[in-house]
Image (cartoon, rainbow over all chains, first blue to last red):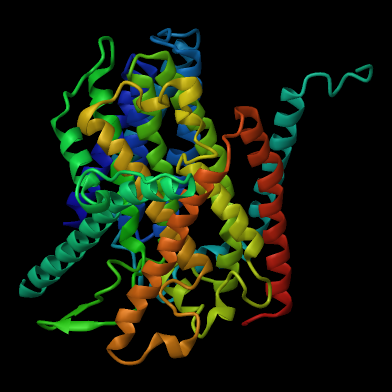
Amino acid sequence: MASFVFFYFAGVIVLTATLVVALRNPIYSALSLLVMFFHVAGLYVTLHAEFLAAVQIIVYAGAILVLYLFVVMLLNVKREERFHGQASVAMFLGVTLLTEAILLVFLSEGPMFPAAVANTSELVTGNTKSIGQVLFSTYLFPFEVASLILLVAMVGAVILSKKGILDPKS
Amino acid sequence: MLDFGVRFALTVSQIGVVMVAVLLTVAALTLLERKVLSWMQDRMGPMEVGPYGILQPVADGLKLFFKEDIIPAGANRVMFMMAPVLSLVPALIGFAVIPFGPNWTVEIFDVEFKPFIISDINIGILYILAFTSIGAYGIILGGWSSNSKYSLLGGLRAAAQLISYELNVGLSIVGVLLLTGSLSMVAITEAQAGGFWNWYFFAFPFPQAIAFGVFIISAVAETNRVPFDLPEAESELVAGFFTEYSGMRFAFFFLAEYANMILVSCVATVLFFGGWQAPFTFLQGTGSFMWVSGIFWFAFKVSAFLFFFFWIRATLPRLRYDQLMRFGWKVLLPIAIGNIVLTAIFAYIFPGS
């Protein structure tokens, strides 16, 4: 049962992720990305990570993708250009990564699927709490680094969008 | 296997009861809104259908049901048909985590069953936020697929407005979550037991009245109601994103708007006004009377919020679009963040209260 659910989610994720780049209409691409986000969230739920699933939908599906759609609709692109200049680079990287993935699957030792997640500890404290505790103890330094990077990005966005803020005359 | 069957039947009937209750409330709201607005403007409102016009929702429903379903030429048919469903389903799905009454357990055929709570998941409030944010897709796609300039402008406005105000809704409830220490709607309600001074609107150590102000303003904006109904401003955009819709598809958008209104009223009740808790413990009653009073107080508070929605609709003029965005980002957002900082400080100084 569990592996059936996994294969359903994984299959839909792969299919819709392919459609995102294969479809010609950018609105359809955005919508298949939406379906993909939902299935990734579903995968998180099967792993007992409900908090991550909810955040996945709120942040990606609820905010970022709406912003994408907003821009696509505002520009009213009916059909985007295919095969940009970086096609050859993309091809090279794609083939390399694919080969690597295939090799990893076939050459790795041990079971292909890890055993089912032991969820007893999470159920006691609730996984929001356990994420918070891990984030502020074990991973405190990466967490702070990430927040610093986000701060820099935010200041950068403000400076880029405010014309003349770097110009002393104005 | 019998266990599973009984559990399945119980849950399905529970969902059915809640859905029917919500849809009946929506029907009643369409009449009540017109009546309340009329009384505020010194008019009678609908009077023709039935005594005092109480059968008006039935007549409206029949009319919409038999209307011709028009799909405009050049519209994207699939998206056009999907958009109303995409906006109605998220509005109804949010009710799954609302605690309508006490957290009781009843045993039926050896299956534990909570009569007033469909599901108590530990991320309840995030679940509601996630699905209300999905509701934006129905509006945006409905506006885009209609192949009409008014619809497209309405859809674009809706997209910008919903993203901006969703952020404020999310930030304004963080104070409550800090005080409770849980994201579960049931736990939040139970933390406010024992009289109205324990409701988070008034509660020690830091009353969430400011957060409630931000929440209710943003909630009005998220449900596209006056004075924030820019996506459907009729003096500028005909009817905004649903200009081209008719018949049942139009009705779906309409149902979604009212269902969303009920949902945010329920959330406001649970987060800031103690859910099903009575203002004084002696009003709560004891034993089996408790569930009657629980349901009563919950319905009473939700109705008060719904009346508030009608009231501001009758009172306030519509904002201009740039004013709306400026207000959201430059006024509400700093207030919400300031509230989080203060609540965090007070929660640290007075822990466990």
